[in-house]
Image 1: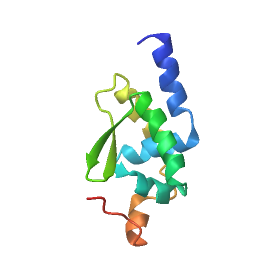
Image 2: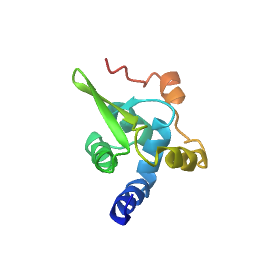
Image 3: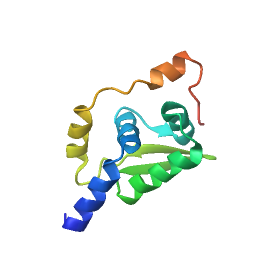
Image 4: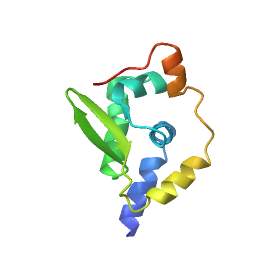
Length: 109
């Protein structure tokens, strides 16, 4: 890894909302519509964060019909370090389980 790659990586993870996105993705793959509920953000705002994470190579996307399901890229050279850093963060206040309990969990199939 060179300095520019490390800079890109660190910039990508240095935003509060992107850290939350990565924390959520450390446990399961999710759709943009689920992030809008989890983060209380608009779809375009979430998409911009996902674009930055994808550009840095931290996430991958899988198309399922009209839906895009996002996951952490386990092939990224710094994936083990990312998982360690995410483990140091507290669990988010809003969880996927709370979406399910509130009937807001979207099934993107």
